[in-house]
Length: 143
Image (tube, rainbow, N blue to C red; front, side, top):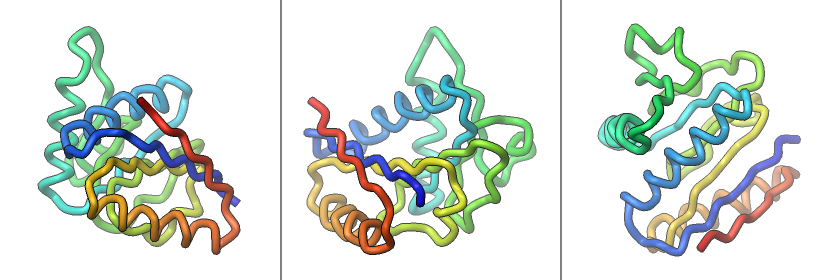
């Protein structure tokens, strides 16, 4: 069974959620994992892509949208469709309101909750589903 980490932010904004997603992506990558950020739609994937370019002026996190030519050659991908097959130790950062099909193939799963009502409701449902499926769910309250 996969371990699922829920990171609970005190903020309500999408910007705060994306900023934390960037820091978490950087941490996951530096720990030697490949990473896929699963987004709700193309607009969110593009916002997350832009945020990854800008979040650290002193470093670069190699990443690409899943449909770009570079996707096969970088350790971090962003997408909206069917989850790509994990390669080695791959983590999933789920920014989608629902749990994607095939999540259990990933070594680790991370979910980010902020205090926006729609996100809270969607992620509570995800939490309950993961637990019902027998996965270990670990909360991390931040700030």
